[in-house]
Length: 226
Length: 290
Image 1: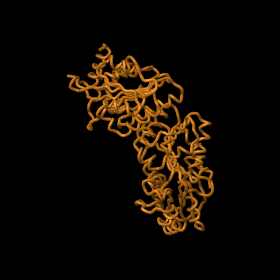
Image 2: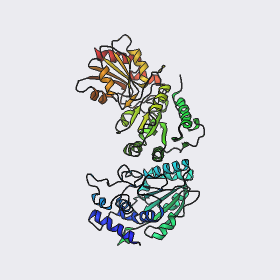
Image 3: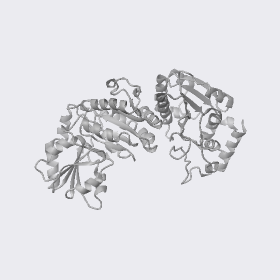
Image 4: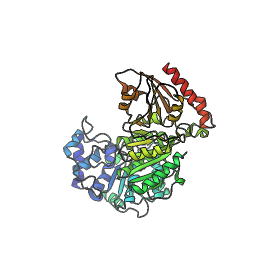
């Protein structure tokens, strides 16, 4: 793992004064790091630049890892992480796009971000843009009906500019079975990877299907963190 | 009389050519009435996703229009309207069809007398209740690109003549001394028939939110006001009280009563049963002003 990634964990610890972090945040940090460090196209000085890739933290939960990466990449000062969830902070327990530079979408209620990402992908296609849309969902979020509406619609629309990463941190109450197979049956190109292996993450993020939306199931278990 | 839903579609098709930011999302309903167009997207029967997709389009700079029947546009995707549009301060347009019991034979699953009061609970949501198809066009053209989420309640029940309505403004239909009657959207015609020979002011409201309290304060005659609304009765009560502060005002709220409607038949039969005919409205106005 890179020095940058180690710095990220340090930023999170400084923000909370605690080395133990919310599992909802920790389980996303590897994917988010690879995405922002090596894949996503953006300019932190111009976070709304038209020539950017879009990232949607669909589940909205555990945003500290997301905030730490935005800070590490220059969207706002890292010192601001210490204000997390305070009264006048821009950094709430769910991201607010009207406050956080680099947050494309306000999320928190599960099942909203992915369909909004579909709308963004459709919008980019209408504009003739080559830019990509990435959405991160959780396996628990896959209990929501709107996720499966979106799965159906993205497959039908052949939204090849959309890549969704499902962080399978095994928090779903109903047994989801083979999540990748389910999305494949809706017309997605799918792959399942180790959610903490940065090279697997990089390879999956940089090889999207040319005709179908891409689903990357990033499997990660809490006990492996010890 | 012009068919309101068809005219809405004609207006949108015309405006798609005029404004390349406009994009229409549908969930099957009315989809077969639209000509194929790259910015008319029938997503299938998934109204929650339809509203979220509309928000995604808004994030990309489009001005989205989502359309369906009231229960599928307001009640099922309520949280999407709240989170994805109001909380994110995104502009978008939501055009319903089938106000209150327009679809009388379909039963309450397809009816929507609660739409306005549900949406009044959303900060920032603008609400438009046109009384005719041409009033819809006028109000839509004035407001569709104003950057706020806006709901348009369309009804197959129309007044027989157009008024020169303006978004966000009450229109003064007549002035009197004994009281004020405020009619909303398609209730204007029955209200004007009901007050014939009565010495009352009649105001016409086609923008429920933001409510034009200033005109009400200027024009309100007396301390008694009768609301005549085409949805659940009393939707504008708090707006009237707020506008008239510190002056006390007595309000009689005529509209659809809060009860489960269990009959089918024609909409006019529901009007009869609920006292929403000109005669029924007149009786309540006379009673409340006595």
